[in-house]
Length: 355
Image 1 (cartoon, rainbow, N blue to C red):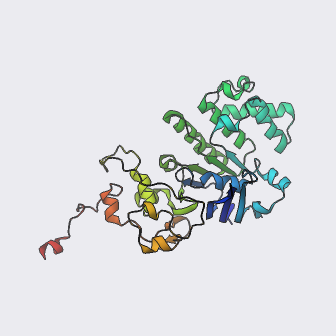
Image 2: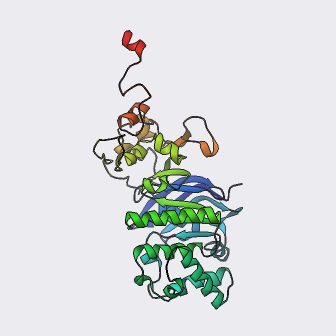
Image 3: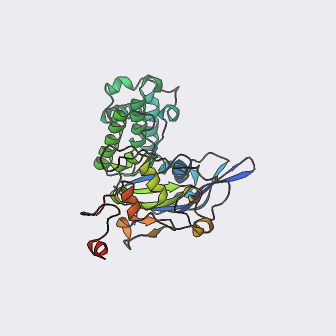
């Protein structure tokens, strides 16, 4: 049985007399020790999904419209507030994307760390302070005991993010949700934060959900990746398979818009045209159709569902929600895949040339 099961999660926002269909039926499983990535552009529903799972959607506008989030046999969406508060922070924790706003600017780091330790682990004041210093030291903050007295504004961006991670892992949660943990950090600090997360997952055995818009972030840390667009998963596969054989036009567009230093593709960056779908109406067709070169009549009239590409099931399954997956020759032409050995794009087999 998976540690965390999300089934058909749907989230709506009511604002100015309109309904925003933010998340439109996502499902996934998370086993102990798994690392899972959720990738998509801003506004696709990544962060909202995480907030909904933990019961911290902004109220009264946001609400869970349907679905289940089952953790250790309990549906988090139906639990009383007191029981949910016990699970949140203790068994499931979240690293928020902006540590400057997620940390309280008027409280010392010590106060913010020890509060969680005393609440969930029932530690005394001295024991909580000692544990907080040990945790700060573990995430690479020098002079941890002295820095406990500091306020968030006295830390650099990277150090603030380390404090946020420390708060999330303080109670040794079983599931850690990291929401854009490297946003606004330079590449060197990004690498350090990702290595820290990788180490924590390995040493603590916790499961990780990494939410990001950056494909490069999931490439080095996640075993499986879900690509999200307009509140739905449009492609899901083991991360290596997703990068080697992307089949949804949106996934291909994301990869083509990322700078690469290898020789596989020397073309100019090719950004995705158009704009994201207006989500104030319920989706009844492919949301990516207005921006898609492969759109057909079905794309404009019917909503595609995730289906296996090669018949594989379970962790190895590669699923795509698309009526017209990108053909192999187009992946080769885009430099995402190598042409088959001995042949170049457009080459014909010997027998065809002889004919």
